[in-house]
Image (cartoon, rainbow, N blue to C red; front, side):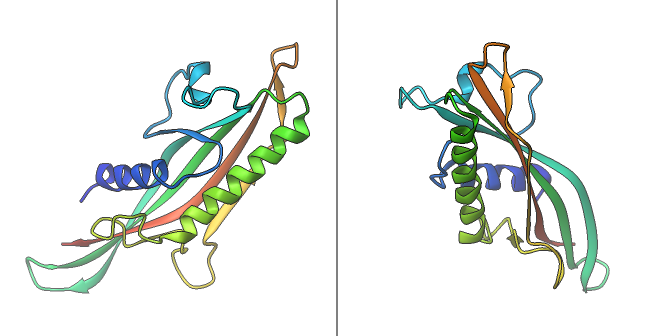
Length: 170
């Protein structure tokens, strides 16, 4: 297994989890994001759309089973940050904030729904914390901010932090 395998498993799971207002899942934060990627072309008239970027902030390994010179097990823990940008054309920022709240609720529900992100051979668990008593899912949401002087778009940044654990034969 590898970071790339874990990243792909989680991205695929999120793309298929039917999360309200989620338009695009990006495997990596891009240098530039075209405006059109915030809104789904298949559903014209949507006022809000979210792009979610996967960012693996850290990786820690711990030996969990000894097996001699050539086998055993290691737990690899990744700190995964889901950087979420909701962009809305609602006239009121309160309506954009309501859409963002619906998105965050749907995202955290999707994480809770399957602690192996649909890939039990890859993800041992995610959204379950790293030890008893630690936070399982941590969410931070910024205030809505108006983009462009005309006030024609509102953007809300949300940060969802989860621990992802992979078990390796090593």
